[in-house]
Length: 120
Image (tube, helix red, strand yellow):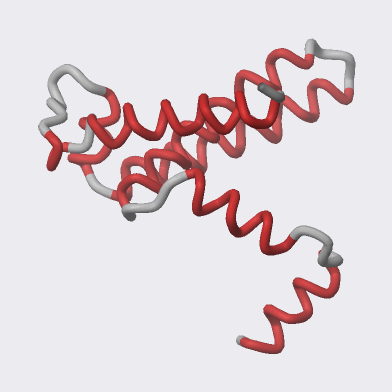
């Protein structure tokens, strides 16, 4: 199996765990971080996304100055995890994000951004 399929499998497994921890699926906020975040509502996990995005930026800046790249990977993993919690809350999955990336494949970022402005 190639590395991208392994990554998608890992994301799919994580998405399934997150889905199972949703309070509507029996997730216990007393024993599950995901259930606790989801019980608190969007403000809780959106705040975490903001915090993790900031930490990701700071880690990338540190790598620019010689820090270990593993810290950046660690922070991106935290960011992705919290984004996946948000996706689950809105009944979406990593596959939805991958489908959007595939839709954009081969399209210039400049052209894609201009098209969004035209449709707004």
